[in-house]
Amino acid sequence: MTTTNTTPAREDAYLAQIEGTRDAVENFGRTESSTTFDAYEIGDTLHRLRSVAIHGNATQLQEMKMHKDLTRLVRQAEKLQAEVDSFNAKMKAVENAIYAKS
Picture 1 (cartoon, rainbow, N blue to C red):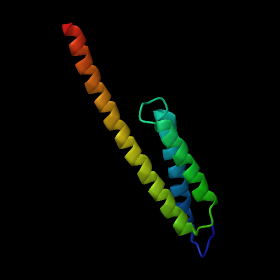
Picture 2: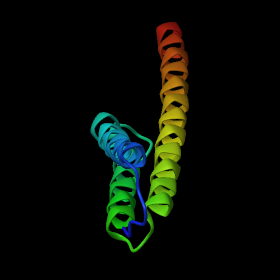
Picture 3: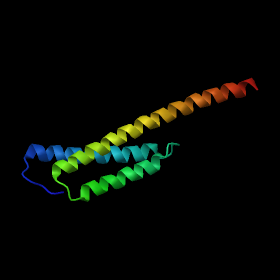
Picture 4: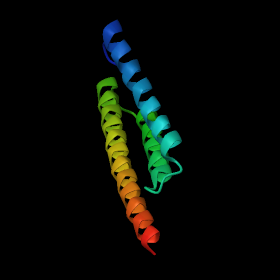
């Protein structure tokens, strides 16, 4: 990261964004790693992207944008995972109903 003129408030916002992205990526990888939606691989990819964003040659504002994009991707992955979980629950209910009739 290359820093230009920065204020304490901007520095706090930057650090909060970086920390928020770390938390989001790590929590997704930790909570979703045993699911069926390839979440482990997605979590690993998000972790690698976050690492590259931190160590890349970007300005502070560019880096914050990258982290916001990563956080958005985590939210999208969580929504997709919730849809997969919902589908699996519905499928299990149908399966149970079918086996109950046999």
